[in-house]
Every structure is written in C-alpha cells, then in structure tokens.
Length: 81
Image (tube, rainbow, N blue to C red; front, side):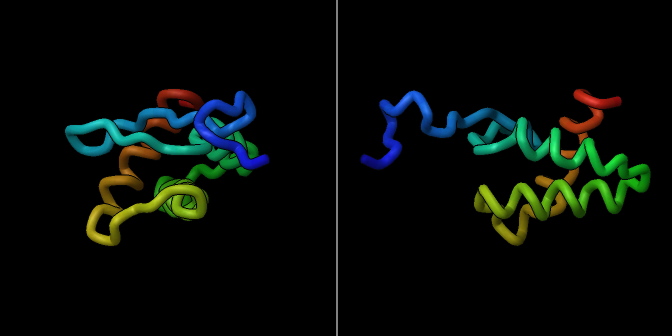
C-alpha cells in the first residue's frame, strides 16, 4: 500500500516564505537539521548546501533559485541563529 494523503506516515508539507509568498515544501525540518550538523559559517556555502538538499526533495524553478536560497538561509538563521 502506497503512502497517500490519508497515510499518517506520509510526508507533511510545510510552508516556506519565498519572496512575498508562501510555498508548500517537503522535508524542510530534516534539511535544516542535516545542514546544521555541518556547522557551515560561510553564507554562500550554507546557501548552496541548503538549496542542493532542498532541490533533491522539491521542485525549484531555475529562475527562482536565488530567491529560494535566500529564503532557506533566512529560515535557517531563524532556527539556528
């Protein structure tokens, strides 16, 4: 049996503020936690790592990659300082 909308084990979408709107995303908590363990200090490397992991689970339009990277860094800083 597949994991559908009613399966309690199915991934739950979360919201991420990108530019001026919210988008539904999968795996945000896991991505943030995984990247936090890397202890990246350089913001460019942090943005690259977050975006890379995010794109593995969510579609990101190529034209919006910079906006998504900025949104992910902002969310990361809210959580981890």
